[in-house]
Length: 260
Image (tube, rainbow, N blue to C red):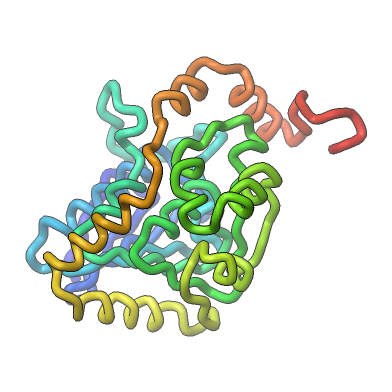
């Protein structure tokens, strides 16, 4: 089976006939996504769309974690390709996933939070293990997540979007399906076959017509204000305090005393 390198040791890309499998494989960091891994997922989407031998992409994780979002500790693995200078939001794969002409299926095998949940949401179909759990934790760390603000209301409605973003609570697979965040929940042991079945179903549809329908669907999303998000990440104090608190395993300083 041909192997393809995506610029990072935290991802594996395997070919199974016309299906590409991109596996998040960074067990030592619970599959936390580095910048190189975000860019690598975007490369996997581009590879699937440009290689005539590939027709669909399935994204999954290892162990009991799909992806918990970005690595707040800033840890990078040796052997990763350097990120091109000057890139910020361009490394993120979310728009590439939702606009991909080749079907993208997420096989969510476990914990799915932050950027991991955005990957699942932006996929054509998210097939989810009944063991999976979800959370939108960015505000706990002082992070303005522009992608969630733009896309979450289109999936679940404004009231539920406020609930999930502002409470940052954890919820399970059946609730995620019930509110429209994801579409399919299957027994954990059936996840791989169910994801393959979803890819085959989408591949039965006409590619050009499918692309236009996806474009029309994507028009339901609001514009993404990445400028505010990345200005805050680089300049504001709250993300720094949130990340320090996370690493030091303490409450951030904005939580009122007695509310920890």
